[in-house]
Length: 53
Image (cartoon, rainbow, N blue to C red; front, side):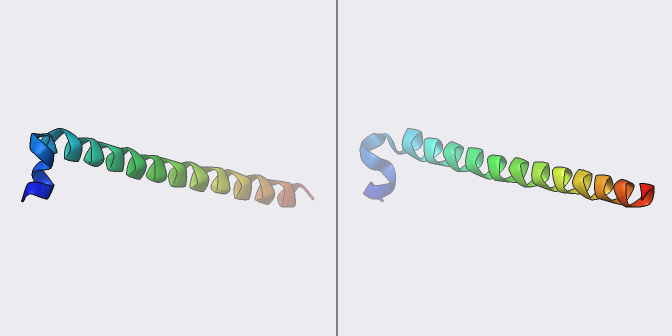
C-alpha cells in the first residue's frame, strides 16, 4: 500500500498519470477520426474524377 501512497503524494502522482493517459487516448481517437475523414474525402474525390472521365 505504501507504493500507491508514494509518501503522501500518491493522489497527485496517480491523478497526473491518469490525466496523461486520458490525453493520450483522446489524441489517438481524434487522430483516427481525422484520418478516416480524410480517407473518405479522398475516396469521394477519386469517385468524382472517375465519373468525369
